[in-house]
Image: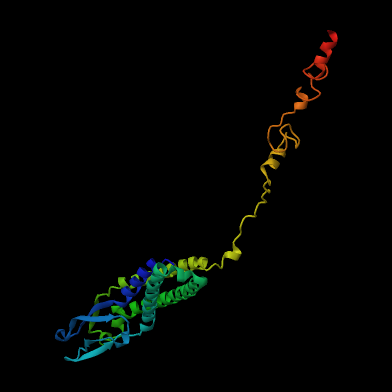
Length: 277
């Protein structure tokens, strides 16, 4: 598994979400200007238990104030996302240590790739669920922290004599980045799932190999191959053992050669000469 990329992207995922802190600002202008508050800052942060976040707004009734609470608790989806990112980070770190220093143990009896495949499949599914849940949770957080939506829920702003307006919206680009990193981790773990599946050896029965070609048997001896070559019979002039054996019977060196009993260098020559004398 390519643990290096999943290691770093897991860090980016939980860091951009878990360290977030946002703020928005609004103003309440009462009919009596002395009772107004033109700069009300509202801060919120991870894990986004917004129902516990409140601020003091003027009631426009003397110097009285009222506590205004935000709406919603989105901690479950945010904490689930960060938890998956942290555990993915830890597993990626452990996997890198195993791949570098314990490669033999990892491949022993093929148990390592099988365990790795199961854990990778679980993390892939968890990244899908957590990223989708956090994307929906982030959408709800944006709506709950929209100053216009908050103003709609304030009683003091329902009176026409009072003026409530938004001054600054919260910056949620970091949270948007966390969702992007969540889905990037999903893609990375899905790709790793395929590579780990190939290491398990489960694809071997589905592999198609080319048919083996029949190999012609090699000749037992060099002499057999030489005798069976085209143009050479088994009884050639060189004999069966490949050596040179001249045929003396046809070259005049035998007992019945050209120089035999018919005037050659045989024993019949001197006898004929003595009779003539």
